[in-house]
Length: 574
Image (cartoon, rainbow, N blue to C red; front, side, top):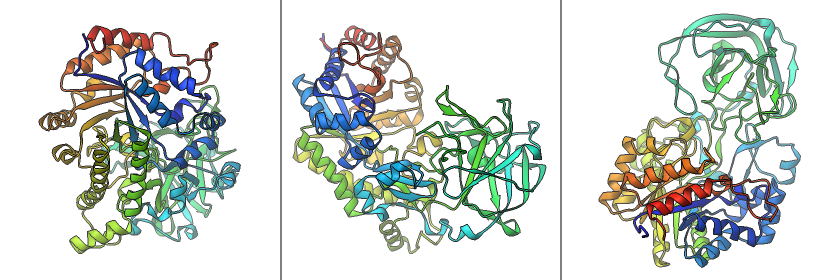
């Protein structure tokens, strides 16, 4: 007998599905049929505005041909789901209006499709954003230094995470520079190298939150002095050709730069690490600056040659550039009425496509930075803060909690307007409660996905009736960790008190074993207090590069079958 209290759903992030496979209406039907067969009764589909689809198509012939074949993919997915009596919800990401990674400004890609400048090059953005760059989330004026290009770097400090012996000697260090972060040249420089021991000034954590160094611990430091560097981009590397290095730290903690009089120079950092285009080589290309990877661990004294067999680069390099980016690369500021109107146009497009509901997700790929605390100071935010508290937060001391709450109020204005439109159309509104990032101790791997200096009022979303449903969105954590976390349990209690159904969403890409996913489904089902489980995302369920001989999607053997069998045992479908 069917259990009507628990719903299995799946999310389609279609740019990932069609990145290397050309989809036709029949192939989308194949996807929806398979989801229905395995027991999915609700489909979530990430909505992307036209400008973002153009960005995706720039890099993928398969995407370009798919759009020719399908038109608007979301509308087709909605129709096919409804034909199979499945619910269909669109998911919008208001802060997703551009990329957080840059391309060299003179690269063929950026010459063909211009973007907006940042320290590391040029970022691709939605055309609406391209026409209104000042409406992106802006940095605090007092924290955006100017005229640094004239200040020579006279000393570079390299800080290790611990007291392990340092094998780096003066003859091992190489300094490479670039005028535009595209192809670095080795410099023949004379400098002094000294080693010292210093005290770590803060607790240091790596990208996923694991401790690196505790405040007060002793660490070894290398000081390169006697420099006179005016180059915009400076890479420090070594001539070691092995992988036996030990000089490790997070990218941001590893390097500092100083000018005349030992004056600290604000910098952004880079290494060979990159989420997009992960195979980097500073000799022949560019590095990724200020892209939310500052807490990633880097090892300096290893080979810096790319590892093509692994599809990514080795470490072996740490790089710096002066200054800060004035704006987030892509995310828009919620305080502008024009921005809220633009976001509401997406809501209207989803309603017109026939969706049953709309899920609003905060996390995105457009706000990645290493210093989120200096952003969120756009003119409407500053003006309202000054009206309320008599202080201009752009240049005067301010209360970050008050600023975050103010920005949260502006975002809630958008949510209320969205709720009105959806209710008028007979649609339901769902909100993301992101337990991994809506917390003061979030790791960089999670806080980089939201536009820092803002408080998202998830409690009031539940208590005021704004949310008809909620998504517990987990990316790095497994369900057992999520459902034993104090904040998650508080979210579930609040939802229960306000009768808001909660669906837990978890990535499926960690395993292709259907038994593993079936066990997770059963664990979540039996935990109690949850209305459903969302499989995130469909592109992780099948071979994304090759169709089968029958022209159909090649789902990984046993994955869908394992989930379907458990769905039947649990009585989730007839």
